[in-house]
Image 1 (cartoon, each protein chain N blue to C red):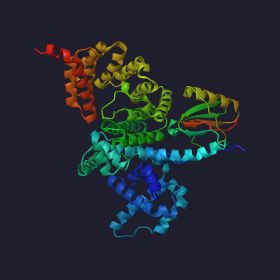
Image 2: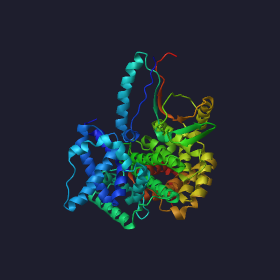
Image 3: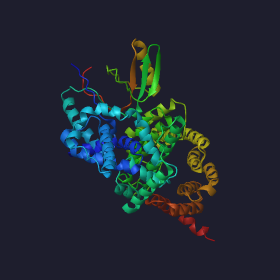
Image 4: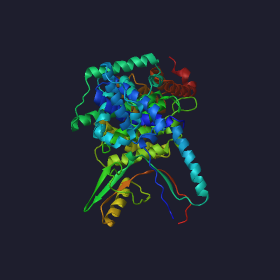
Length: 423
Length: 124
């Protein structure tokens, strides 16, 4: 570790709490960000000399708030910033400081900060970008890279998101139980968006977007530390860990998707799985099932099966049925169709899939699964048509590569009958 | 004399480590451990899962309650620990409940799954 690496880490981990408190003081995202930057600069100057403060967050909040207030004063042509010597004494008063800074607010501070980024007035892409910038502290460049857009475009997206959020107004009063539950749900959804952005854009085990998955897991754990008794947050954390545990097995050497049942399960991250399973057990004790818990439970059944043949498809089917009742969606039904195909065969699954046609006709996985089922039923020509639709709808190279393999495979199989099929 | 060495750190910092950083720290720690394993002095080594995976059983006279999350009081001190192989969290909680009944004073048992376990070389 370099001389200042420990400072960077301390700044990153203190960021949500400090930004949350500064937002409460200044009631303005830009001002809070500037104050945080200022506090970080001071930290980089004084910490190497004086060593780390006992409570880094309290130190940063104090310094950030003062610098922010001072800025206002300076604009009014008053006093200058306090001298460095004074600041370096801070460590001795941290206990007191933390009290004075009203540490008890920190839970709602962080939740507010997360909620600002999850505001339903923002489209999904802006929520993700804002959260990565404001809460996680990723640079605009890093975020732009993950989204494969230019830095200028990302800068603009974030500026627009901030303008929207302030126009919508940020709620600063302490939330009641109902408000808090609503905020938690919105924040959980935003964290899942961040994860999915990383998950779906990932085109190899070492991709930039793996960072987004890690970041989402970090945010989810942060939320769970603040609200340790929320089973849906346990479910969310478990779900993210389970999906991310397969990162190294999801693509082959050519960068093509490897389906769950074909993955090398030895590549799955056992530690993430262990943590997720522990989390699901905790959640289940509450007997308050929710969509994240159910999805995590499904992922856990896959994680528990050492061989694909040992997968408990019956239980997975039942869990998808529960999810359909709780959160009806054609995508959920499409997923259930996979379980149905394992339990009852491709014909029954295809019947279920066909009902979804009008709602999922623009969805890659709909055509992909339909093609696979038709292929199993040896309806080669229809399978090929479905795969053709799928490849046209692929959103990344890995998806396209997978379908191309299916098509090649199909071409090899159906070659002899090809002539007969022609009119 | 047997000594327990308990490791404390800021979890929000260690969980911000990248995988490479985490791997490197574990590798360096393993090198230290190996030296002591070779002399037959080092017993079990355990790394715990994050506190978010913890459940705490609080025992007061006549009642026990189960709380999500780690033990968070500062008035009590760590006095000992057990390692037990359980099929489920409920089984681990039952064990803790039995302990709390056998122990007349009030106290807490934090139940935290392990991320890593090495049995070590100590004679029993």
